[in-house]
Length: 319
Image 1 (cartoon, rainbow, N blue to C red):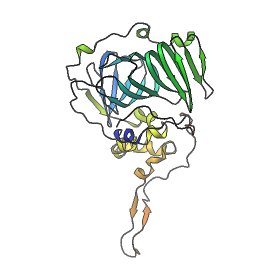
Image 2 (cartoon, rainbow, N blue to C red; image 1 turned 90 degrees about the vertical axis):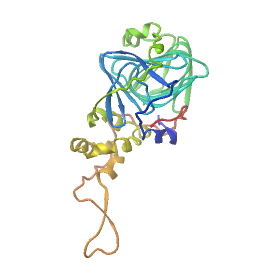
Image 3 (cartoon, rainbow, N blue to C red; image 1 turned 90 degrees about the horizontal axis):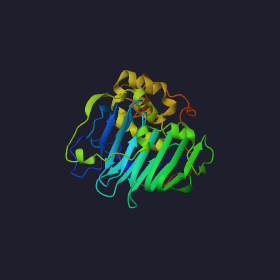
């Protein structure tokens, strides 16, 4: 399945301002148990209750953590332990309008109104909740969706399935998805306890407070490796975002070692140089002899390849 983002989304991925937001924010972290972080620009910050989520934010929940964000229209998104997702776009006001790319983890979205617009992309499925409550779990080559109430659309390539309350959809290893009248025992057992009850409404505590995340450190290659090896539509805009980190020796060495997984970094690592000096005829371009040479590109064993059918984007921007 090919992940396709609008041009304005790709541009939004490049700029990640730390600025005060309007009184009616797009979404706020209202519940946090354990540790969690956001990557904003090329910097990692400790997440805290009250922090506004901005377009481009990468949300990372610790292996024993749990987080929840709420929207101005009353809908809420809970993220289980180990969840990793990129905020492709999030708009302020009502109804809620947000798009995410899920690398892995369990998510529960509740209170979706008919006029709201949510979209969750992943390597396995694309999920568009229409109304009600839905649970999504993504891990490796498997994705599962359980519709508690209302309606949700699940898309793979050009095929879309409409799920209604009680339906359980699962897809693994690139095969066709299957719909069952109830979720599997393994799926239920994998969910956080918070998911079995209505998500708490805590927006009132933070909607009039501006909480800034605490700066932790610049990102390392290892901390963003999975994103740098994501499908092209996700990883290509990250070149400009993380380009400054290529000056760090450890980050640069890891980029070189893994260049076959993200060849778009070659112009950064191997900039062409203008030929100058005595004997030079005119102007030419030459590779920096001290720069590393890219290995032939091979398939990425850790990330499934996109298939050629483009997925029509349903939301808007991000950095």
